[in-house]
Structure formats: structure tokens, C-alpha cells
Image (cartoon, protein in one colour):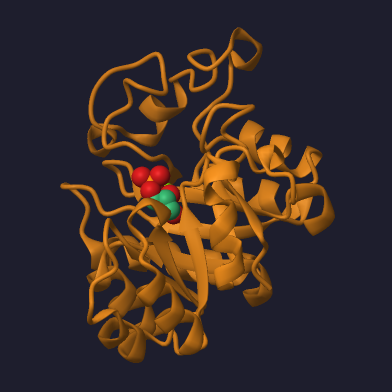
Length: 244
Ligand code: G3P
Ligand code: MG
């Protein structure tokens, strides 16, 4: 069951994004679901990371796709955010799933297809691990890459899929939906139109909005039957306490 509030990259307002510390921060705050990004290192290990490079969120330099696991683990991925998080290490997918399960969190796992990433290869490296470790009611697999989502559906009839649309929702959004049978359509709330939102809800799909960090501006959209928001800080929504 999807949640009304999903912490974007973990509770990234309070801890370094996409780390185990951000999962613990989310769980400690009473958040039920998190969104995390997954992609592969150069040696093929799936890791929880957003950018194609490591400079923004670590003390290192260079492309993620050129690192081995040992090199990635040597990076400090916490101190850039706050000295309190010094010593935090990049999480492999496996490690993040262990923490997620330990804390009972739901997972919206975004498969990130960077320039170096092959959608089919990433799905093959990620899908079986996630399906083994995370129960279906606590899982959503999302991507902007229709190639990745098509490959998930080819390998797995029942995996819960979230179709991500960048910027405006295309007029023919339902073509992808009919083919992929998603649980949800995940959209950038800044480009939503009432017409598309109504169509999606009337067709029976859940609608998740990213990345909503302005609770007051977003307020009117709740009336359109939005399922939930993906936010850096779900705690900033007045509705958060009652939705828990
Ligand atoms: O899952 C929605 C959102 O995470 C997509 O954007 O760039 O934050 O991964 P980004
Ligand atoms: Mg993401």
C-alpha cells in the first residue's frame, strides 16, 4: 500500500541523501515510505546514488561508472551534508535493503539510467535482489526509462511499477500505462494539468507527485485525489501527522 508521504532520497532534509542515515532518519520521524535511486558502479555493483558523478555528495571526484566497490567504499558520503555524518559510506543496494527491512520501510526504487547505464543491464542486476528481499506491498519500481520498465514487465508479470514522467505528462500517457500495467504514474507536480490528473485518476492509477517541497502551494492539488507526494521533508506538511 503506497503512502501519502514518501521521503525523497530518504529523509534528505535531515540526513545525506540516499544513505542509510537518511533511511534511519525517515523511520525515526515516523515516515513509512522512502524513494531511493539505484545505478551501477563500474564493476557492476548496484548502489544507492543519484548523480552520475560523486563530487556533489562525497569527498571524491569522478564518475560513478568508473569506480570499483572498494573505491566507492573509500569515499565519505556524509560529511558534505553535516560533520555529524562524517564516516557515512555509500550503500550498496543490498545493504540499503537490509536497513529498509530492519526499519519496516516501504520502497519506491528509482532505476536511474545515466549516460553510461544500460537499462536492460540495470534491471537484470537489480530486479531479482529486490524481489527476493522486499515484499510486494512495500515495493514500487519506478523509472523515467520506458526501456527499463518494459524489461521489468517482460521478466516479471506482477512487479509493482511506477511510470515516471519528466516535465509535462504526454497526451498519450495511457499508451505506456496500458502496456506496463503500472500501480502508479509519478509526475513532476510543477507541470501538472487538471485535465491529465483527472484522466489518470479516472483510469484508476495512483498518482504520486515529485518533488514537493512547498506544502502551501501544493495544497489545492490534494482535492484532485493525489495519492501522495515525494518530498525532501514530509514533516513540513500540515497533513503529515494525521496521515501517519
Ligand atoms: O522519483 C522521483 C524523483 O526522484 C525523480 O527525480 O532527479 O530526484 O531522481 P530525481
Ligand atoms: Mg529519484
